[in-house]
Amino acid sequence: MESSIPLHLTAERTRAKGVGDEYTPPYPSYSVRFAEGVSSLVCAFFGVQSRQPLSMEARDASAGMWELCGQEDGPISREYAVHTDERGFDNRVIIAYWDDASTYGRWFGKHRDELIGAGLEVEHHGRWIEAVTPEASGFETLYSSNTFPEGAARVATGGYSGEIQEHGYWGSMRDRLPISQTEALDPTGTPFVAENVPESSVPGNPKNSENSKIVRVEPHENLAIIRSGQDWSLCEAAERASYFGEVEPRLKAGMDFLTSDGASIGCHANRYMTSSDGEGRLLEQSFGLSFWHSLADMEKWAESHPTHVAIFRAAMKFLQTNAGAKLRLSHEVAVVPRNRQYYEYNNCHPTTGMLGASRTVAINTA
Image (cartoon, rainbow, N blue to C red; front, side):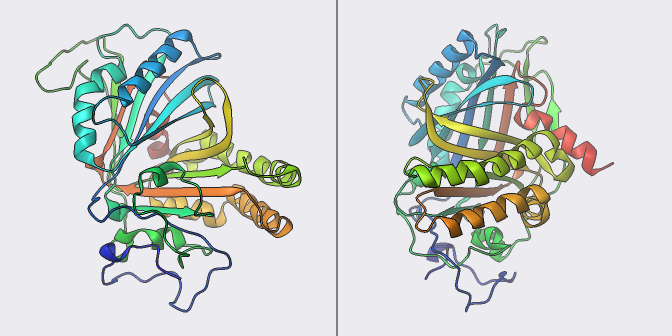
């Protein structure tokens, strides 16, 4: 048994853990290990959208984004996912990871304009860039298996930890964050939408258009983001029937609540996505991606909200019924400073991603 927090990020605690040193979790789980020299990660989401079905212009834009990711200094890992949002728009998203912020900065400086469509007439689709650069101390992972790399695990050159202690109890998510050893991680400030962003914000290439459809969201301090996934590709027929009969309907209900009504409990935005091979073929993997006002808001939903309680109970019943279940679960959480977040949108509907964050602010301050 070892700690989720690697030795080089261990500090003298000034904030207590949720359990004592004698605690033993009820089942094995693992974290991933990044190289000691990795001080920060980059998780970027490059999206396109259009009314159903996804327009050819959107498809071409996404293909262009994918090609840019293959250029010099591009991401170590990239993958596709798709979803239909609450307004009935089809969305295709590229999820990209770097383990070095400087490399990402060089790449993004070269390609930001092409990614967001600056200077183009973007009429029949929308584009967005959502990127967070958490410090290594503000990032944690949890995996039910140490045999499949999913999400951030694809850039973790240190592989998997041994079985970790910090899981299986409420509050374990916070305990896995190295920064939580000394910091409360409270949010400060409120997000707002900045209108009429210059068509090019790359130094040395100034353009400005009063009619630009590009807008940027200015974030707040200590936003929390979670990606939580499930992979049923190895499940046999009985286990699939159990998962889709008992667990997935409750999972979808929880995701639908966060998407449509999550603002009432501090969730700025949520997407329930299915992984794709990029050619329109869906994979047997899905994940929720949520942006939250604070880690505390996320914890409160997980511990006590009826939608998540239903998910938790269904999952526990599933694991008890399916001994040796082959369903693989993955989870990554980041708490991110304000100056390490970037949200930009071109011709997107007003509740796309963090564009809808003002709804959360309005509800929480009413």
